[in-house]
Amino acid sequence: MITQPPYLKKGDKIAIVCPAKKLPSSIDKAIKILETWGLEVIIGETVNASHHQFAGDDSLRAADLQRFLDDPEIKAIIAGRGGYGTIRIIDELDFNKFKANPKWIVGFSDITVLISHILATLNIQSIHGQMPYTFADATPESLASMHGALFGEQLHYEYTPTFPGRTGKTKGVLIGGNLTLMVMMQGSASEIDYTDKILFIEDVGEHEYAIDRMMRMLKRAGKLDKLKGLIVGAFNEQPPESIPFGASPEQVIWDLVKEYDYPVCFNFPVGHIDDNRALVVGKDIKLINQGDKILVAQSC
Image (cartoon, rainbow, N blue to C red; front, side, top):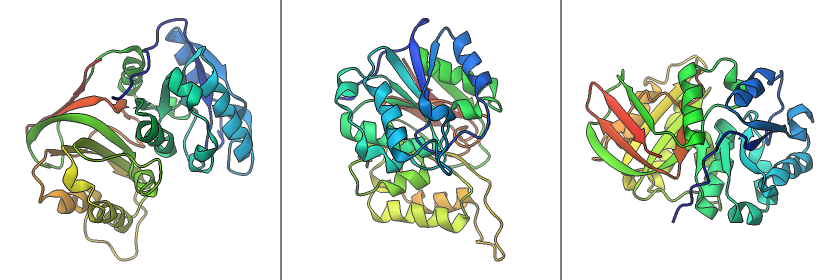
């Protein structure tokens, strides 16, 4: 049984922490936006901390996150940014008090580690969505979707894809996040069960060959053939290569899943893009690919 944390209401306290990379600039604008939602924002020590590229050393980042995991007055924890570093502290965290009083964990990119670990080990839902560091460039629609996910509104997305995928209709529990991190967690306690799930993936700054390699690893591990559906988000900012790989990220992914019969959609607005729409990981999602139109929906 997957547990859904209580939805937020005006007056609730939320915390911002940085479990990975340090913030290079102020997030005051993001804090003001969260306050306009009627939330009381508590700032963790890591928000202003620095240790090489990290938001404080491993001990500080673990302690800062632990403080808010344990605090029953905090109803959601939003990661200030991603980067790299969550995997360095994940095994130092104690989730006993969090399990007794679940709260929303919000973030994307490197925060996939935390989102995946919570679902894999505790069966608790989290929100894959914008972080304060990305608020400044976020589309109004992406921020509205994050508000909706936190406050229990239905998430309903319709769009026209530029890469066809496979038509069909399906429903199942949503898993996923950053492809690099999903692959990194294979074989660990943080690995999610892919069986009968709808998987979503995204990534940034990866060569096409690296995307091919990661997807082939998942396929060889028997993860892709057990799915109910696949949602492919943004794969952007590929570095140029002196010798082209010969296939786009979409083509790479499609070649590895085209033999299956479940619906596959491409170009979903999720990932390292301004229009990064919120998704609730661990919650049922409906996926309909009509060819010229994609519908993705999660009800509260």
